[in-house]
Length: 349
Ligand SMILES: Cc1cc2nc3c(=O)[nH]c(=O)nc-3n(C[C@H](O)[C@H](O)[C@H](O)COP(=O)(O)OP(=O)(O)OC[C@H]3O[C@@H](n4cnc5c(N)ncnc54)[C@H](O)[C@@H]3O)c2cc1C
Image 1 (tube, rainbow, N blue to C red):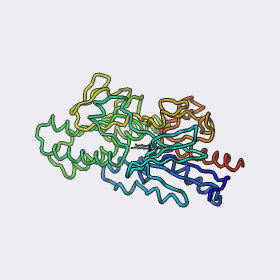
Image 2 (cartoon, rainbow, N blue to C red):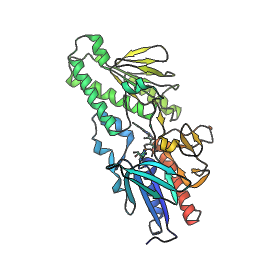
Image 3 (cartoon, helix red, strand yellow):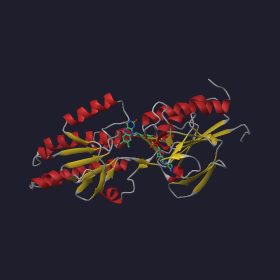
Image 4 (cartoon, helix red, strand yellow):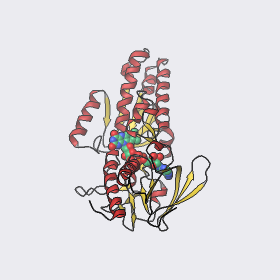
């Protein structure tokens, strides 16, 4: 029986932002039977993305960084489905079931949009075709298989120029994803070659990270970024700052500086884009992200909260949009949960 006092909270996205909101709301509304919470996510597991590069290097197993979403849901309903459209005016969300494509429409009193982001190739089809990315478990496994394959071929290749191309790994993007990926690959390849691939000349191993920004890890304090830069360079990784990758083929990546690097492995982590289900909503956007007010709500729709990678939240000190990081998503989740409590109970703590 549904009471007229009942409030339905619908959380879209079971990543860092969505799960953190869910867990806080569980505590806040533990004894409140009038609050019903539902979660929608296309995968049925939470993915700890910062450790994807360790899957690519084989240090850990996919199950180490994926937690079934149902284990977070105590009394909450979970739908494994793709969010196919959001109707803010009528407070409706259409979801498409992953296993049979059937569409279901959910209503809500309060909506939490935490649908994250996907890889942005900036429309460059040749780069998209000739590169790997690092966003899902499948991406990480594909990179691992490919890297092992490259070492197998290189070990049987006596032409040093070809061997060097096979052993050149270029990561484009100097953010967390790119830096963590090149760091893991560097250790993985160098250790593997040292112990198992004795026909590969260690000097032929080249690790490169290309960053469009002045350096790497712009998300971090400059002192920490400097330490990371020193550490990568000390371990033999070449960092190319202030440079964009503009084109790629099977055998080369071409940089905006005019340099072309022969390589058999290109990994693209240079930007994020927001899915059209979010970027197409009738509200203000910044690069597809939803612009929210100080309470992390959409100004025209005060019952709708947005956080994580798909939210455009301005840092009042710098005027910039906060970068897409798990750390920010977790902090934002506290604000959203607190504001939902206030909106539903009317109590300000
Ligand atoms: C390799 C890598 C390393 C990283 N390292 C760090 C790090 O060290 N530190 C850090 O702070 N950040 C790091 N990040 C960034 C961090 O992962 C993101 O900023 C964070 O995941 C954002 O949280 P979110 O909840 O907004 O999005 P996500 O965690 O991506 O969650 C979004 C969820 O929504 C689901 N979804 C998307 N679209 C739909 C749809 N239409 N229907 C249903 N479900 C959908 C997705 O499946 C996903 O589960 C890293 C990212 C990567 C890729």
